Amino acid sequence: MSVIESPVQQVSNPGLEALLNKLQPLLDGGRLDNLVDLASLLSDLVDLLDAPLVEKLSTQFEEATALSWNLGNAIRLAKAQTREQPTPPSLIGLLALLRDPNTRQGCALVLRVLNALGKQG
Image (cartoon, rainbow, N blue to C red; front, side, top):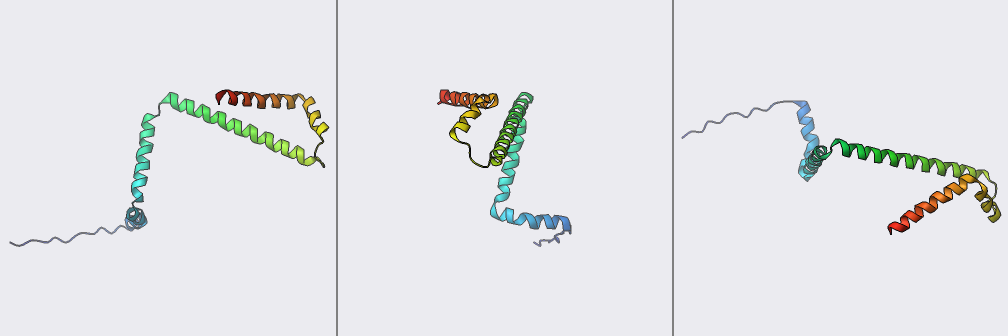
């Protein structure tokens, strides 16, 4: 019984060979499996996301972005105003800040946030 051996054809494609050479460390370390799992997870998330959920997530993202923007601006403004003062304000100077309606409004906001946090705890 004779076995006929057929020559193996090797396709010479430099682009494919370069890709395989780059993927070889991922294959050897089993890390390519992690990428496949991540792609599967993303695919599942796309299937789960419906229009109302996407709308809710986008609204929350916008609110968080606006909050961080406003907070960052307020901190930068306060830092600039504090640096302009040659000496730190005295205790009476700090209390004089409470005459400003904006300061009182900011204090009220902070106290209301602390109140809400206290109710949750």
